Length: 323
Image 1 (cartoon, rainbow, N blue to C red):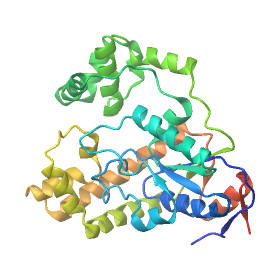
Image 2 (image 1 turned 90 degrees about the vertical axis):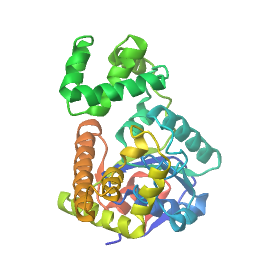
Image 3 (image 1 turned 180 degrees about the horizontal axis):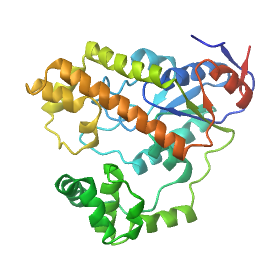
């Protein structure tokens, strides 16, 4: 159900951050808000999804299509080749540049996506860790494959007591801690102290943050249905094109939801139904992890539903009023 329409009332500009679990409707809400700002200079929608940045992953990441992008400027969608890595630091630099460009043009910056690390980097900054050499990064991933989560955590603890706060199942953070320790000789926690001592520059005002929520059962239903839509839109062909690039399987783009199961189907290891079921399960699990992260790391962000979003923005953001 669509809420009441939105109308711009004043000339004040600012930044809106919209997050939430995958398939919750964030992109659609961001586009509605951008169109509502058209009469006072408009808005720019800036991607904060760690997979939608990759050029070759249009379908499997549910990236806004040409029709949506024609309705309002969209930035940082498909701007990085799958052969490269887009770290949170790289994205933060790009995102701040796009926010500054929107502000310079008199536009509202609407940052939207479910990648919590990206949003945290934008608001709080990142530890000033030097660039990790590719060889060490590859070694970290290989070590994790060799030892598993429990083994890598134990190896880290032998050199870094702060690793006690890492979970064995959190492969990304374990690998990051291992590679930083290996490359710099210092635990990641020490670098993070320096980050807290030199926080990120403020984004500007007004700044409004929100989490778009759905009932868990509806969210999971959308996750399942959306992957079926992706298949109809050509997800198998997208995976075939990605495989043709013969990329390192450790690259982030190769770990996008659906890539591995569909590749296994193409190789004859899984039926299509099995690949679908695996991807749907993985997507639901990913959504659950996102909700857990938001509950723990963004507890002070207001939660809204699609039905009350118009009232929320009309009340809390100066250029929008409900009518």
